[in-house]
Image (cartoon, rainbow, N blue to C red):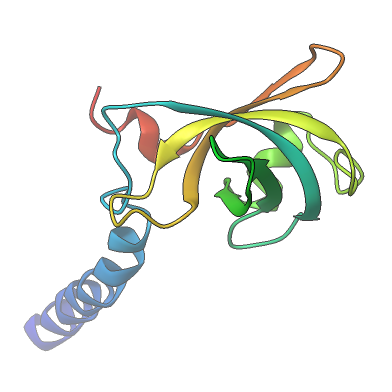
Length: 133
């Protein structure tokens, strides 16, 4: 009986150790979580998929040069629950994107909210966003 209990305990510990990288994946340490950035741009593509949905868009910088950006959102399932769909954005749509920029300076962000040209807002909520509260 002790051998069986030990085996079950060892198996449970093994699963916990194996799942640690999965939990670590959902961190936001690559992004500046203390500062929100707002960008106005034009959608070039929208990938409504797992593990993360992404919006690709172009923004004109201060010099008038076009920059290509991407904004990472939550999973397709999470986004669906928030009212998003695969047809929500199409190339050419004008949007305002609000999120946390990448710490490394690349033109990527962790999406918090998108505002359409008509003023309708679509937010992003992730389970890990509430872990620190």
